[in-house]
Length: 282
Image (cartoon, rainbow, N blue to C red; front, side, top):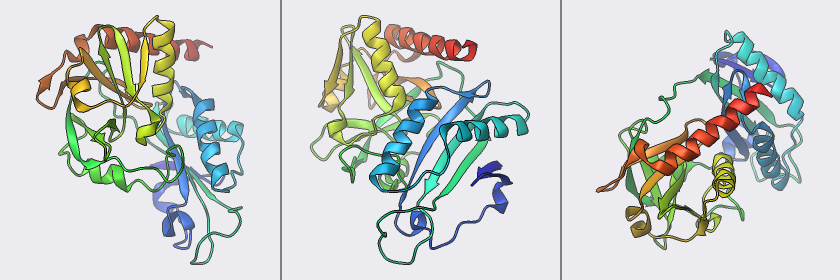
């Protein structure tokens, strides 16, 4: 795997990080995951804004501009034969003594990982199951994509495969939260529903963009606190993330769903793809 670390292109096996990096010792670090389309990242500006917001809150410097990160993405794209890829941009707090942070982290480790993109064809369905693991509350008011990912890891351990299944978290109060690697949406009587960030979910960028698309398409949108029965009584259900786009669900628990034949799934995914195509042409 070819990577970019602190300004240099390196093979993954040559990367080195100190065991005194506070990203390792205390989970002080944040990341973004995305894919490229003809070498470009959809919602790149939004990804960087979300990452920088988390870094500011925890006083971790970001020594590279958006332009420099974009150049690194393009460099990995070109060095990989011009094939689109799956990317993870990781900012780890950097080296300090054992013990909690100083007043700020001024020398982070910044790594851009790229691996081959293995995404199922659009419209490939999954089934969803309800997880026993509860969605925990975030350390901050809004959940960040941090190195503290154990809640997701615990949920993932309940699933034999993420390729065919998505696990959906409930909160301790029994409200629907999100998937292991996705945000959750459902449609009832032509209206779109998704859980509020009050449930501790990640405010996904694809989630936000889909809410905008739905509103522009004239759909009533409901963001709030909902129970399992609200999802199981839905007309159609799908999940979203930046790599897989929209994934239709053919069942939630024991309740069958229309999957890829869902009218609103088809409509919203078509609008999403049109936006991507517009970016590539721009």
